[in-house]
Length: 115
Length: 113
Image (cartoon, rainbow over all chains, first blue to last red; front, side):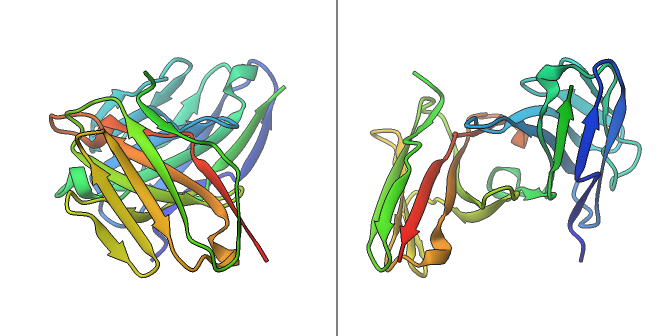
């Protein structure tokens, strides 16, 4: 079982470039999330999805977009990269049936640097 | 008051010792509590959920104190492999949706030989 798979692992972008961070899960989880983690800070929620076709903003959505066309995939799009988006990005998923006590399963993360 | 607060440490503890750290949360209506472990440059992984009556998993014990709004994690007979950052996670949303999870900044634990 692969769990949550993120690609790429590392990426360097120039200011103004765009890219998509890929995330896929094979656990049939309805809930999926994108977090960013800056040094010395707690994880911040960017966007989340409660099922295919449904997405919603988290705490820090500006500069990002998402889509959820299938249960498995939840890509995160950066349209105009800025240095403030330098961070480690984690995708996660959780079961729909016990949301409050359902653990988050994280991908390995994507280290993004914008210069 | 910050939503979820943890002492960042580092806690330097000799191998075999017992170590405990707390996490305070601001929303008294919080319903779910977790401890996650994050190794350096890795993803967070669930260590244990925290139940109202307290719970134990091997060398790890988690407690919840609703009156004082904190949770705690106790590690007994610490191992070198326990060195990691421990994240306190609280679900502050009383309605539906796990989007209300709030992460603490983490407590850095170093077990020394």
